[in-house]
Every structure is written in structure tokens, then in C-alpha cells.
Amino acid sequence: MNKKTIILFSIIGLLSAADFVSAQTVKIKNPLAYDNFRDLLLKGIIPAVAGLVGALSVIMIIVAGILYLTSAGSQEKMLTAKKALIYAIAGIVITLLAGAIVVTITTALGV
Image 1 (cartoon, rainbow, N blue to C red):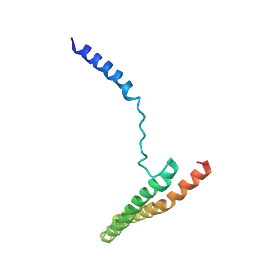
Image 2 (cartoon, rainbow, N blue to C red; image 1 turned 120 degrees about the vertical axis):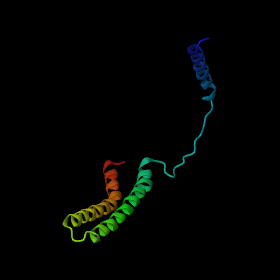
Image 3 (spheres, helix red, strand yellow; image 1 turned 120 degrees about the horizontal axis):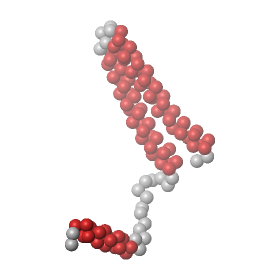
Image 4 (spheres, rainbow, N blue to C red; image 1 turned 45 degrees about the vertical axis):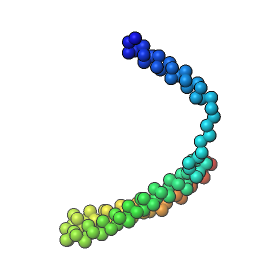
């Protein structure tokens, strides 16, 4: 027998065996603590992402402070530090508003 024939019979054999396996009903336990996507989003994903972004924003405020202290009077470095501080504060504001934005959108859509 050649290689193609062996592969063909193997595939046919595996597909015919799948009928015996699919006859059983398997109940899978829900590994998540939430029953729908809205609860998962509002109680699971958004707080985790908001915490991560909030922590990164605080770190960026510290980095901006270090950049400002080490600028040694250079206008370019001071401008870079100010931009970093502004973006870090914007990140904190967006983090604080993220949950409220999602709740408002889901309420408006009736989800």
C-alpha cells in the first residue's frame, strides 16, 4: 500500500470512531464567576485593566518627576517631562472614567 492509501484509511477510521465518542453528554463547569459577558466585563475585565493602567500612570508620574529633576535646566528635557506628566494624568482620568463610560453605554444600549 502506498502512503496516500494509508493516510486515507486512517482518516476514515478516525472519523468513524468520532461517532461513538459524540454519543456521550459532557457537562462542563463554568470556570468564570460570571454568567454573562456584561458581568464579566463590568466586574472582571474593566477593574483589572483599570488597576493596571492606574498603576502604570502612577509609575509614569514618578518617571516624569525624575525626568524633570534631571533636566538640568534644558528646555527640551523639561518639555518632555511636562508632556509625560500630562499623559500620565490623562491616563489616570481615563482610568477613573472607564467604568462609568462602559456602564453608561451598556445602559443606553439596554444590554
